[in-house]
Picture 1 (cartoon, one colour):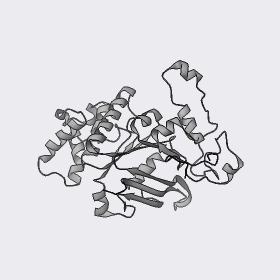
Picture 2: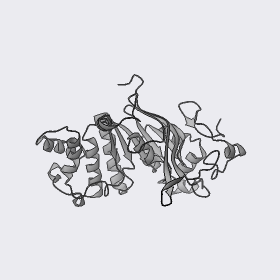
Picture 3: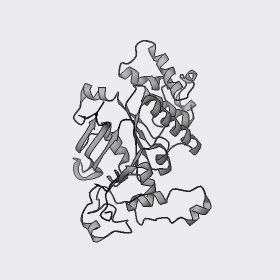
Picture 4: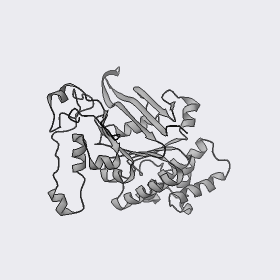
Length: 326
């Protein structure tokens, strides 16, 4: 284990997707999905990654897992660079890094049984022999609170919450150290969301897991995360401890996001001042110059339109990318 406790370190991560045109498919532009993102995740920590749809959250998670080849930057796992790994080395790494998908309906093979889906990673990585897999599948199903007697059922015979539990069991099969949770509850009913979040928190404690929890529901992120990073148009604009972010949001975009969280008490909710952002998120094909948020920011100054602010530490491990925060 690392002496400084860091499991994942991302430095200046860049991921551009080329836009191709014409018969010869020549590149005419780049979609700047992730543009210079840096952060780290400690052992046993949950880092929440939040932002509007299309801001690059999922791309960051897939780049860390090496499901996308990165355009620039570096990614370290237990202080070892993983951006150049290929073949057997990359395959071995994936035992330690797994993904829980957003959609439990689309992420499971409809032609396979629950037991086969859960067991597949064990077979791919040669972690079981003969009929050992049956005992392992039963163990994993019990771990995610599913009846092992349902292992012969196909995905369409399960509810949405049960399907997501199958996806979680599959992710746990290789006993990974790090899991990317890519909006794992956004496709589920509210009552089921709470059960899945509680399950993920319990598994984190029991198995000493580390999570990157991607979402755009800030109330869920606050409940599960130790730290929160806020993304906008491919960049991190604020990152700090969860309690600090919700008590003292400093970036204008973070304040706008938090003002949109519903409050159960209608009287308090009516008295609260909401921050309504004008316009739409700019296209990652043609991001604006300067601060990427200045086109929608109510506080924007000339400097915001001219230069990109750096992500700076203002104290208490609170990092903000804004010219107006001193």
